[in-house]
Image (cartoon, rainbow, N blue to C red; front, side):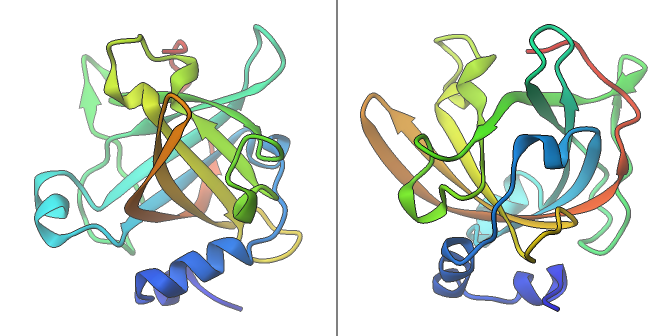
Length: 181
């Protein structure tokens, strides 16, 4: 079985092929889980200015029964380390809240079998993060333990691809739930 470490060594064309060959995933498959994320395919300069590892957390939204999520800034301890959340004002530092939806009909056709993380659901019109969309698929059939995603920008009716891929490897259950947005 393919591992996150093996995926991290793949060049972008292989990452794209793996995303297109990904397996079905539903929003409820990730609800309640926290995933260690590793950015792949970014230019080295961008990695140095931002981060390589992060955490994504997913929960069922009590308000509407759907699934929502957010990113957590983590200590940069290497791609194999367990996520350690950075703390801000006494709680984990969260950002980039998103709605998790079924990818069919909303994600690019080649990866619509998965889920779509829609950052526009909670962002203000002025927040550039609100244009970000992440289609995510399961790497192994029938398992939500290892996921592969890709980021693009949705500007009006135009989809602008980015070089950013990422793996998500399940770490455990969500331990902190911030308010949406």
